[in-house]
Length: 156
Image (cartoon, rainbow, N blue to C red; front, top):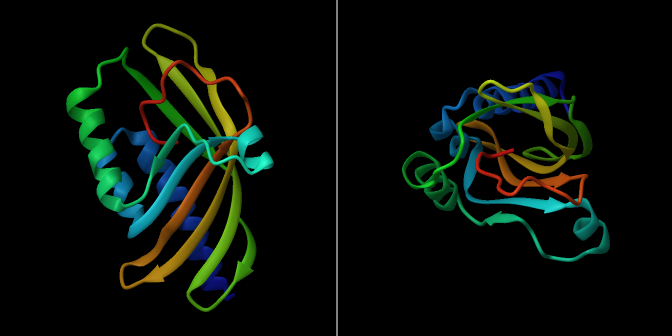
């Protein structure tokens, strides 16, 4: 892995955090390959090898459909999210493929309320080099708490 590869990888993580914190949801699917996988799963299920996930999308098209749902069909109390993402740990590096893990914390702020911790956990990623730069081929969002708020609207 070259310095440029690692710099590009950290920029991917930082740009992702900025995009999902900004509320510009249409940016979210563009971080992924067309045949990507995105799963939101509790740590207990992941550690035990159980397949049950809170959310599971198997293509960029499904991510775009989720964005449509966020924009057009889901009704909820408005809130802001702020993502704080740790530096990715590269577990395996090949010429055009990286297996990485990074910690995250998401804070939620509802209007007229104090900010609170919404979700904490880690990303387990497969990142690939494409003609458009680095993209997620797979992103598993493994959240630590067995309890989550009654709904997860926005991407983590």
